Length: 595
Ligand code: ADP
Image (cartoon, rainbow, N blue to C red; front, side, top):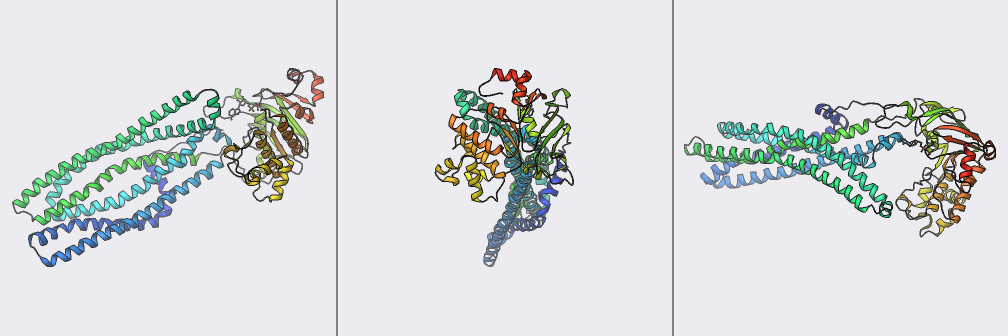
């Protein structure tokens, strides 16, 4: 199922995709921004040009009338420049933020629809960095790129025009030197892009490690692994530091190159221009206007030289963002998928074979996790899966909601192939209660109502009562409105499990997929959780990964799995009488658990 997508990394391809998918929608606003950038550039050129009358009329001719007129003209020019700058900057900021917001929504929209395999093959930190770092560098590249090409390039054109008007011979001399600077700067741009890609990979790793270290802090501490974690983080910090430093050094290199070239240009112009004024070939006003234009041209010139680096950084971000957006969904809904009808909720696996696609696995047939498994959970009955750890029990549970796709055979619910129905109706028909209870950092009430946002408070309370959770919830500081903390840290293990059961109660689906918790609770919690589970299973078709002996004994049918195959099936008594694997397991661990 693995597809190799060709990734287009060339600058023009990325640029045109950026234009089509991010920028084009804002063409109107950008055009307006460009107009104001043009005004600003015009005002800049005008301010340089005004130096000529300032020197010639005010300082040399000592013309009193010109003093006020020119003063006013200068004030007007600077006001125009300031106002235009404000308007274009606001417009650009607006467009930039919109692009970020839209990309973040598109990314989450796409990713949340992808199959579970995608999330198992990509670390969380790496995924997070798409939303933060990558979209931000994209925004900076787009807005900065456009601003530089609009504002700075236009200013430069205006200023160059002023220079040519004032003294074209001098202008030629100045511009003979600058283009030489372009060659090293183009090289810097390419290096920038490479360094940035590496930095972002490391950044993703960094977030992932930090997240794991914080989430697993209890394990870290209890195994005395603080120093080890410090070492791992320190290593990453070091390599991030080196990469970032390299990026900044590369970027900084373009400044001194420009600085030196600028110095050479200004010196030559002053010497040659001064000579021409002394020789009376030009007037001092023209010369000062020229020098002003030259000096004003320096900043835009520098930004133009640097813009390539920023754009390359942004393209690296864009490349990663587009790659994420192009990730194909390995499990897609069929065109014209039907609504699942599950009046009874019979679940049937028919000769199912399955293996996980891993990033470096090229379809090795020997890695079959499930091999020709056939299994039926009759409507309203409870079927227990038993077998050694790694036998494939969780995998079977994951195939029923179609979290993964079977490689051979089929899964049926009330005789409908689950590949023919919509995800929504399929998943609506089942509730999943797993060992690791997933609670969101929200109120108890919202955690129970997850998936049934429309549920009334009475329904939520009923579900909690049935899950033996109402009493403890009522004793919480804010009752049903108590915040449970990240992953429910403010609740005990048994309380978390009962909330998960209440959630499934409220969902009230005909099929229940249950992965019994292995971690032992204290006897009282255990009893309550058990009672709640029994009530939940009562009326539903239940497929349970059973660890408790009581669950197994009470099951209507037991399937014993070994290395992806069903080796025995029957009731507890039948299996014991058979004297096979199950009987062995049972005799080994007769008291409480079969794992
Ligand atoms: P059980 O629930 O019986 O303990 P599982 O169904 O979890 O067993 O696992 C069966 C096999 O599949 C194991 O060998 C495990 O290593 C492998 N496996 C489980 N999940 C994944 C996954 N996401 N990617 C690759 N292999 C997996």
